[in-house]
Amino acid sequence: MTAAERLYPFVMQARQQHGDGFLRSPAHLVPWLGGQAPDLGGEILALGSALEMGAAGLIAAAPDPGSGIARLTSEIAGRELLPAGAVSPALTVAHWIGPLGAAPMSGAAKERPEAPAKAKFGATGRVVGAVAAAALFFYYQSSQGNQTAPAAPIVTTSTGQNGQAPLLVPSNGNLGDSTPLPELIVQKNGESNVIAFHLQTRNGPVPGIVMRPRGGWEAEPALFSFYRPGGNFEKPDTLGNGVFKRLGQGVRSANPKWEKDEVEVGKLSVSFLGLKNDQEMMFQRAIFCILDQQAGALIGCDRVV
Image (cartoon, rainbow, N blue to C red):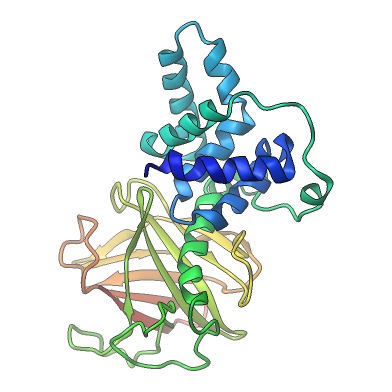
């Protein structure tokens, strides 16, 4: 089943329940679809943009539908910082649905809290929907088992039996190939590599996501997000971006610049150590660490598998 075939029935369900106005509002539609198909973050973000701009009507009105589709693909990809491959299914769904009516969304849907707003967070805000979908995907796995993050660091070589995103554990500085650490599994979400974890803070462990585009270490910034424990992951509470710079053989590090920091994680350095090839996007057996810049202290590390 294609991405378009998966998304179409969900969009029709949203249309029936909330009206065409809901479909025209990315702030409502994107997080709603993210809960239905959390592995299609890029496609969902593109679909929200396509429906907002009335893509079906624009394609129908174009003298040459093919050139109209190409123009919209380029426009949405540039606007949302997405690959063309994620935009194509979105335009297919928009075409299947057809032009949307002018009726507003239903009252219940209209009163829902606003989800990620692009205008509020500048360029970073354009990918909030994709980050939220990635978070929903990872923490949906956690919800199938123990929903509570570990209260204290547990050194292990396994992520556990229920897919719980592991806690980064403190280290005495002796980090090597044989150091026992929890394992972080790199997942693919659209055109990004995504790592989910929990970070120990003064307010307890908080869920975190690093979303690293696969185009290259320095081709474009990585996205970093943290969420209040027990939240719904519809939008990050802390959100920022940064580029993983080469600091030496086998080491890449980024200092995220926060657009907002409601979780109060503060100034952090996020690093991959022991990369076998620090020029290519290869993580296997590298050590993933986060450092508190203000305290100059290592918060914790896990190993990427």
